[in-house]
Image 1 (cartoon, rainbow, N blue to C red):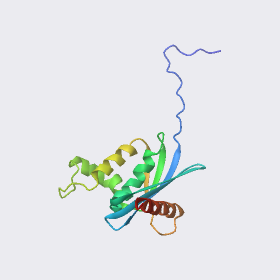
Image 2: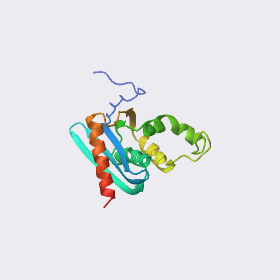
Image 3: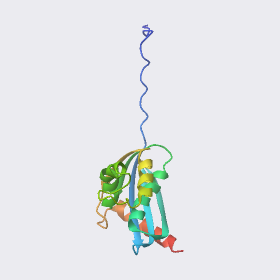
Image 4: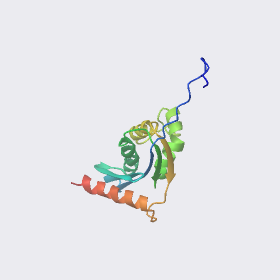
Length: 162
């Protein structure tokens, strides 16, 4: 039997794997501004969750941003996530533009206030809780996940009109 050296480090604990989640998001607006809705379909293994909501007077971009915000906010622990969106505004905003906006005090390159800064800040805060990979998918092109998110967003529009 061998004994451990008195000053040797304890054996490393195996890392606990983060749950893997795939999320499809979409926003919709009837009039821009107008009645709007957002939808998100989340899948983790065999588990699925559908989320949707809406607002009576909003813009399409706010709904596109609300979908990943609400999806991320619904998760109970840190996850490894792939988010599919058909919005280049959302994908590029969170992966490319947000750093510049922050450095400029939430101003655009031409010194105008960033639109929807409240939502961008919330999305960024939620994203930091997870490992997120953003992927663009062409909208209305038959992708089953995108079509499902679109149907949920339209459900949100209908809910907002009640």
